[in-house]
Every structure is written in C-alpha cells, then in structure tokens.
Image (cartoon, rainbow, N blue to C red):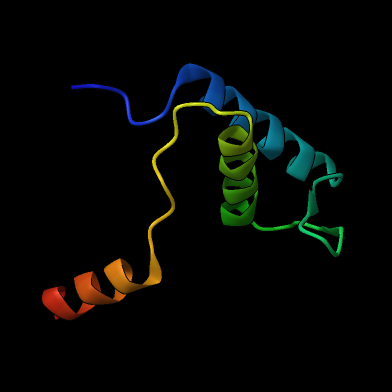
Length: 72
C-alpha cells in the first residue's frame, strides 16, 4: 500500500512536534504558542503542503459532516 504522506512531510511534522515540546511552536497569524499535539500535527502538515510535499488535501467540512451522519 502506498504511503499517505511523503517522508519529507513526516519530517516537517516531527520538527513541529519538537518545537511544541520546546514551547516555541507558533500558530497562525496571531503567533500564539501552540500547545496541543493535534495542533502541532496540523501546523506541520500545513507547512509541508506549503512546501509542495506529498500530503493529502484537508478534509472539507461537508465531507466530515456527511461521514458523521452516515456513521450514526
């Protein structure tokens, strides 16, 4: 089975996780310190996308809501 993310994208996420642990990971326009694990992963993937790495597109709101309804 093919990888979902490229190795370089994984490295970007790893770097973001290390920054979060050190307390220096900044998020978004506000520049506030990101503290949650999920937030660090999201920031890492977002940076990887910006660099043009192989990362799947963000799940759209519609698709997530539809999946939740289907499961229920």
